[in-house]
Amino acid sequence: MKIQCNICGSKQEITPAHKDYSSVKKNSKYPYICEFCARKIQFELQGANDIYKPTSFPKISC
Ligand SMILES: [Zn+2]
Image (tube, rainbow, N blue to C red; front, side, top):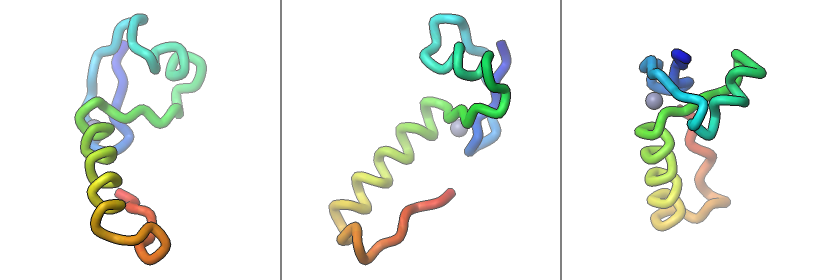
């Protein structure tokens, strides 16, 4: 099944073994995020928490 990343827009082929496969199959609007973007977000959030106080820094939206 072809799926598009909600963030970078890159199309990927996923198999039924993929953790998001059933969610996407049930809901085509499911906000899928590719592995690359998921890792990037996780990294950015961790970095932000290290540098800024969570209360003084709004959520990253990209
Ligand atoms: Zn992506």
